[in-house]
View 1 (tube, rainbow, N blue to C red):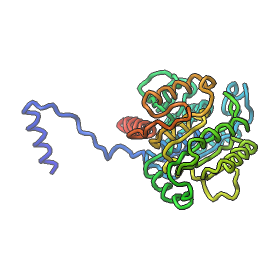
View 2: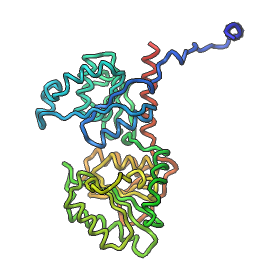
View 3: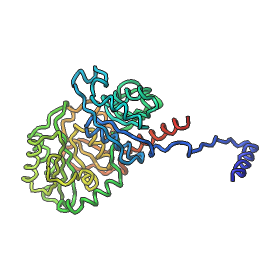
View 4: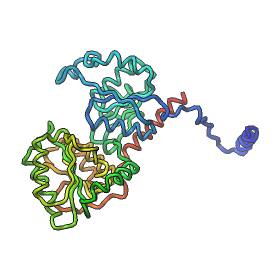
Length: 358
């Protein structure tokens, strides 16, 4: 067979046909078999970005290390990371057995940068706008609304990478279908965040939101699937639950503080809902709903959101994927969800393979 290939190559050269150099794909190590560590600051949005990209690469059960700084405020950016984390010295030892490090967020990117400086062979992937220059990492993935330098190793996405896939949605939708069977007909998923540095979300705001969302559903075969977050707070969650009960609209409420809850139906919500209403404080939840291919309605004060959030929401609006809530359910489901996670993972795979070729 080898002799036949050589003869074919020779005849093609004689005929003047340009021949691309052969690439031995077996010589390029498969990143799915790499030893991967995810560094996290404990925030769900950033951690899900990292896990989503790693899972899309085919890496199962990556090691996730959560780092908690000893100091905060100004010291968080002023001090070197070696002085911020008690685990840093041990982490330097642990990464000797790793091939790839992935992390999201400015502060975690500082740790990635320091570890790579200490061990240059590490392949580092920084998600969200990182510290330093693109050349400090092997791959930088930033969202369009987070302006950053352009470089060969920088990939720009519309929304936030996440763990949403068709298979996961189908599996969770089937698994939860019986438990959510009492919410018949048209379903709205309500994804409720909470107060942030950009604005408050108190008891009055929660009642206003629930009342407004259930209003067009009353008297119809419809219901709501509601989840709160750790930022929502117990008092606000209590108001959400009472308002739902008083509405008379079928509902299912899940909260992270409910110790009786068996598991989290979040993915099932995104699978089964006909539309999603999301508080505008969370780019991550908006991205997840858009990745699930659902019409997305933003709840909150449009003028109060940060400019970079507004740029993202405007971009989704131009694609017909999202708009601010005005009491009318007029958006159509898009043909496909956002594919930012696939874009990032494909870019990472290509950069890994390029390095593997030498």
